[in-house]
Length: 174
View (cartoon, rainbow, N blue to C red):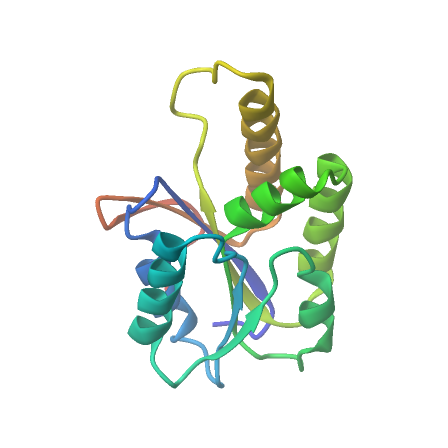
């Protein structure tokens, strides 16, 4: 696999996308870095984060990056495999922080395009449901859909995960 590439792994909640993305990252040489965007705002989320960390094991380095993904991306050496899990929570964090969602999304996509690493990004596909009933949910759904489209356009590989099964939308699996 190339030392500089972008893969986008999409799926619904609990579809198996994180496990698939982790396995994909491990196909690259080097010690993988996990950029975690979740925030443990309650006990259930803390337990979920702890489960994910335990499943990955000690072979991964982890950086908590709920808002700033650009700084850790730019600090890593060329060729290091990186997993961002997930941009859906990252975008949610920005929405709740009152950030300019189009601007932070564009900045992230530009940082990913310039990165000299093999980066795998996990994101939820939010466009297959009904139009949300409230303004904040509609704002988020629209911003997430746009971000997913921007990432897919730049990505070398786009895979949709359904029930743990990969459906390659763009590119080829290694």
